[in-house]
Amino acid sequence: MKGEIFQIEKSGSPSHGDPGLNADTQLLTRGASGWHPKVFIKTFGCQMNRSDSELMAALLAKDGYEVARDVQSADVVLLNTCSVRKHAEEKVWSELGRLGILKEEKGALILGVCGCMAQREGKEIVRRAPFVDVVCGPHNFGRIVELIDRAKRNGKAVVDVGESEEVFPSGEVTVPGGNGRINAWVSIMRGCNNFCAYCVVPYLRGREKSRPAEDIVKEIEGLVKTGIKEVTLLGQNVNSYRYRPQITEDRGQTAKHREQKTEHRSQTIDYRLQDINYRIQNTEDRERKTEAYRTQNTEHRSQTIDEGMPAVGFVDLLRMVNTVEGLERARFVTSHPRDMTEEILRVVSDSEKICEHLHLPLQAGSDRILKMMNRGYTQEYYRKLAQKAREIIPGVAISTDLIVGFPGETDADFEETLKMIRDVQFSGSFIYKYSPRPGTAAMNMEGEIPEEVKKARLRRVEVLQKQICLNRNQELIGKRVEVLIEGPSKKEAHKLSGRTRDNRIVIAEGKKELIGKLVSVKIIEVSAWTLYGELL
Image 1 (cartoon, one colour):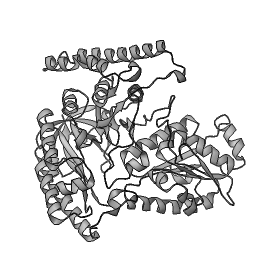
Image 2: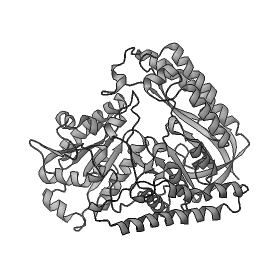
Image 3: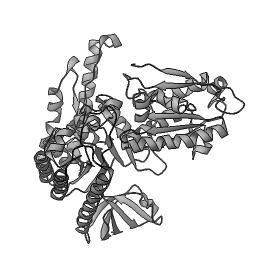
């Protein structure tokens, strides 16, 4: 159903929008009349969803929408949903129940369900919740304004969960920023090609599609102008990022134009290389760094594809991001261990702005379970990768994802996971109980683990990880760390909160003028999750 949009009749649908305006009039006078509809977006799930919500907010703002402070004051409410675990979907259904009551009370309210759950459930959402106006899958966020307008105009539910050729919206989009924010998410690719046995992402977000490198850098430069100091590059597997520009005659582009564009891209890379070399002249290891970067242009020119255009891989993208003026730090998530190369590790080590933090999901420590999960590596491979990362990147922090209670996981399998946690000494772990997902290979596997066993294993991992984090943090007592101040502390508003380069939270007293600044902090006290210090 590629590109197909369904419209579903809604019996007894109330009129939507500003009281006193019919739908067509509202669409024509928005902005010009001084009336701006308000939108509230609630996000469930991962960082990618947060980035997608910001994209939708930017597109709606460009069309004249304002951000509502809560659902009660909104004309449009969008739920950006997650489908990775059953519990995430249950939370969305509960929220929809509350919003259905609100819509009945207000009358003039557009409700939309977006994201992965929308993709999986499709028209079923409108069947179960007939008061929903828009259902939009993750392929079609770029059309969110059109879908809302169509629902208003026709009084019918609009369901758009087909695949789209244009995964990333074209044209200028106001990037999120300002309002005191100093960090932002930047999507560099969508989809996943790995098909892990437990995961629905490839089925819901599709195959990997990489965003043009120039667009990524341009967005980051725009973010910096709004006050952003740190960006996190997002993708289901950022290591496999590879943008292959394709220019064809049927798009009205001549051979001469192709040559000019190729030359322009090469010049852009050359300029960034010159900037890199200039800025490392005074570093202690400038000779090694200069030599490493001197070969970049040669690599770009040799990595050619159809039409003579240069291919840009993840290593190249990191180097380009490292040259953005005014950007203090850059991070990236998530990395598949199988695709983490020594070249990526060396670029992280050599780059001034790329932080010394790797998120490498292990998922399980048992080779038998890893094979059942279709992860594509062994525990020995992972151990060697972690060791190599620490050899190349001094002080690197390695965090991970873990699943307990995968079908067939024995006590012995689980003990191997605990041993891996002890051996690798993760800086942090996102730990989940296995949740069966329809359509995945694991859904039909035998050996379901009882819920009480899953809970017990989850608790053991949490206790172990907490102790490791506490031990790691205690090593910093009395030491000095560099901190990027992000804003007031959530628990102690009179104090400031920031992060180290290896992603540890630091709390210290200081003036609000320091927000967005790099400061030195002496650590005087720690907990498992937080460092407490004083400004130097």
